[in-house]
Length: 257
Image (cartoon, rainbow, N blue to C red; front, side, top):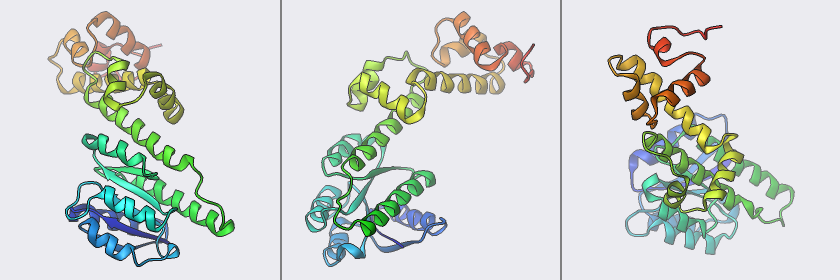
């Protein structure tokens, strides 16, 4: 049984987490759900390590914010697994939370797959502690959570800014990491380079425009998805899809031999 405490001032988020966990093929018990850090700490401070496996907390909360709650929790239980609820616009807060050794970041809106992955890791850590009780949590755990957040934020930026001229240095500055590090990390975590991932987004958007707005000229679609050279866009589209944009728009869905 994975024992979880939730702290978030948005009731819809708390209820959503409880609903998602109740439908998973994991044994999860929500031992407390609180709208501010002070109430959560009031309960957590009375618990022993075996009474709780995971604290999921938002950062911005009334009475006691997430940072203070994490600090108090860490002082009370050094090895407690902690996950932070955060939006992409709050990345500076998330980076600050990295210093507190959080295990992962649940990005709003919450994805079931990410929550499931987190709970599985907590379950595995719990089993490890039972098998080797004197062993502390492995130190990459916090780093792994931070890396996951960086990759997801990079994806979000690319999906929002696919129509702009791509500059790795500008992306790296936005994320707050070294450009070469982000490139290596993204490839390691996704199996794709940042450039290939961006191309995939642009081609997918181009397909939507070709079907959804057939009156657009080829060069107009190219510009909208980030390519100033329509000839290059044409060649790239054919390479990726096996047909030209014109053929795709006309309803041909199978590659020409």
